[in-house]
Image (cartoon, rainbow, N blue to C red; front, side, top):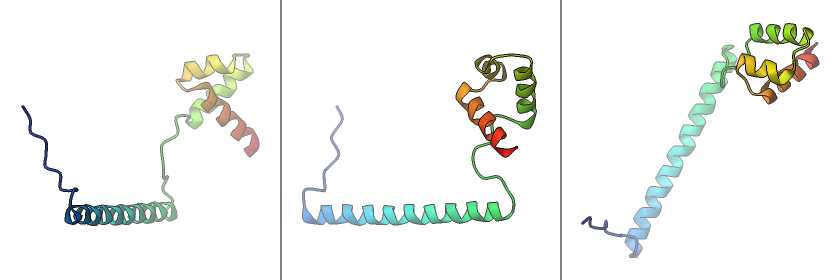
Length: 99
């Protein structure tokens, strides 16, 4: 059988060591977050795209407009191009707002 690992948190010293390790881990997490944000800001200043790539390329949106003009339904078009209908709806609403 497997032995249970010893529990050092029953003593004041054990709890103190655990609290110290938690504080160090939290500090490192904060530093990581700061470095990530700084890198993203630098990328944006350099004109790079930051974030997940769009599933709807301009070519796909042009195809969507053509199919809508032919009378196809949005849900059918969304399935044809491989996106969720809500994604297609958001893209179309955003495109109308840009015009």
